[in-house]
Image 1 (cartoon, one colour):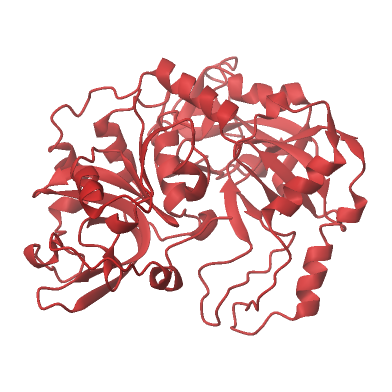
Image 2 (cartoon, rainbow, N blue to C red):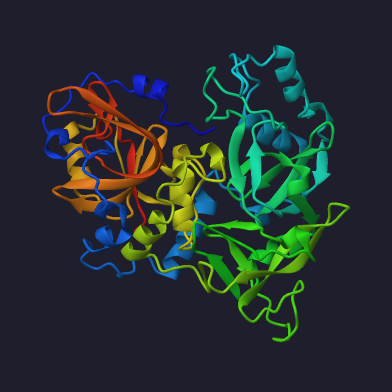
Length: 466
C-alpha cells in the first residue's frame, strides 16, 4: 500500500533534532500565493531549462534504459514479469497476491458523506473477494486494459476515508492502468463483476468491463508492435467517432505506447473520417463476450505524441514534468490525475524508463542508482546531498517523492505533486499553504513538522544514471 504526506504523517515525522540554522525561509520572498520564492517565471519550464549547462545531454541512452528496465523486472519484487509466469497458476500464489494487497479493515472508515461505513458493509466487501473459490490450480489467463481503469483494494466502487470530512484520499483506491496495459487475470469476485488482475507493476481489483481477455500471444505481442506513437502530453484523446464508440475519445495518459497501422490506404476513411490529418493507431477493445479485439482509432497529428520515446535529457525531464503543473492531486491516479509517485513515474515513462508504482518501492529499488540515508545520517550529510541534487533526481521522504529541478539561488528546487507545504517565516512563525496540485517549491525550507525539515527525513535520492 502507498502512504502519503498527510497532516497525521507530518505529526509523526516530528524529529528530536532542532531546526538547523540553514533554514532558508527568511531569505526568500513570500508572494501572494504563499508559495515561497516562486514567481511567474519559475512556473515555466524555460526558466529551469535555461539554468542547465547542457540541457540536451543524454543522461541514459536507449540501450542503457533497456538494460535498467530489464534489471528492474529481474531484481525488484514489486514488479511482475508477465512473460515469465508459468502456464498454470498455483492457488496459494493467487491467494497470496490478494491477501498481500490488504487485510480486512480493522479501523473505522467513513463514506463521502462523513458517515461511518457499517461493519456489515465492510464484511460483505471483504467476502466478495471469494477467497474460498480460488482453485488449487488454474490456467494462466491474459487480458488487456481497454480504458483508463481504476485498480482497487477490494472489489467495490465504494469510496472510504479514515476521517469524516476527508473526501480526497479514498483508502480503497490503489492506482490506475492505461489502455494497452497487459494483465494476468488471476481471480474473479463472487458476483463476477470484478477481476483481480496482475499488471507489470501492480496487483489489485478492477471492474471486469475494463479488461478484455485474449491469448498470451495477442496480449503480450501488442507492446512489441511497430511502428508506434508515444503519448508525450499529459493526456491526449482519440478523435470522436460515432461509428466506433469503443475507441471514441479514449483518454491516453503520458507514456502510453500505441501501435500505428500502416496497411490502410491513405484515402480510405477510418471510422467515418479521413485519416490524412491524424495518426491511425490500433487500440484494444472488449467484445460483448469479454474477449479481446483490436480496432483502428485516430489521434490528431497536432496532438502531443512522438514516434518514439523521448531522449532522457534535462530539457525533456523538465518539459515533461511541467506538462502536469497545476494538475489536481489524485490519490492513486484518482480525479483523472495522479499522485506524487504516479507523477514522477509517468514523466519518466515518456522517456521509456519503467518504475515501480509506489514510493515505498521506488526509493529502494535495487535497479536504480541511489544514495540512501538512515538514522545515523547527519543533517550535514543530508544537506550536502541536497546541495548536489541535479535535475531529474528523485528525493524520497516517508510517503512522498519530489523531482529535482536543479539549483537556483544557492539551493535546490523541486517539482512535486503535493498536498501542501509549511515553512518558517522570518519572525519564527510557521506558514502553511494548501497546494493539492503539482507544484514548484524550494526544498530546504519545507518543514515536515514543527522542528524538522523535509531533508531531515530523506530516506533516499534516486538518480537515473549509468
